[in-house]
Length: 289
Image (cartoon, one colour):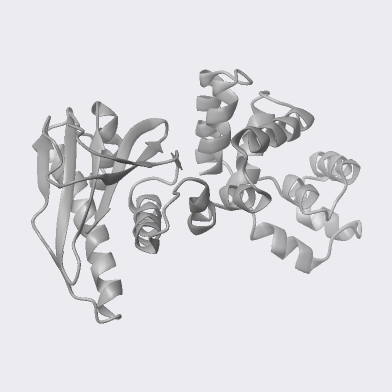
């Protein structure tokens, strides 16, 4: 998630090229964070100690952690802690930028500060983006007092990461009305209160949702592709209804609806949140009644 937010910023501000960003994403999918980078980031080693250990590692062909313990720089407990952080998305993207010769560490730090300032992110929001904490980052993108929206959006995003792709970013959403999306797949729920949830798209970018959930490539945005998105929507709504059943709130899911160049069947406004999966845009749509 962090790679998508910060990487998009770097490309838009011409700090790196789209090709460099693509190379970094390829790197991320094939690598883990180096222990030295994590140790330095966590304040357990200095940069000079990391350089020394990297040199010794080449000379002795021993593992970085073992050498750090031998030198007395780290304890076994420290090494185990660092090993647990090797899949950290923030550190992995920083490593990818460095390994691919995109930016130096000083340039990364400078641009991280600029990224936070330009987006007016608080330290807590920035930390949430770095950690991939959905609930922690949502207040920066979803300005709605009705907690039900935040709960359902959070549930949906977590399941996109779980079932479709973790390479996701979002943009600030808004309430809209009278729109006619080119493609839409959504599902209404009735019961103690009404709502609907689904996805819309204006081009074949919406296939990133369909392909990711079905684990196959659809040649075009057709009924089969939208049906894949509808199945995911049904999955999320089922989880949401199950959660509310423990609060004695009864909800029944209606059959999903697929549409091509038709308005969403609802009165008034609904909430639309831009979602980007590896740069491809679709919109999560939600309305509580």
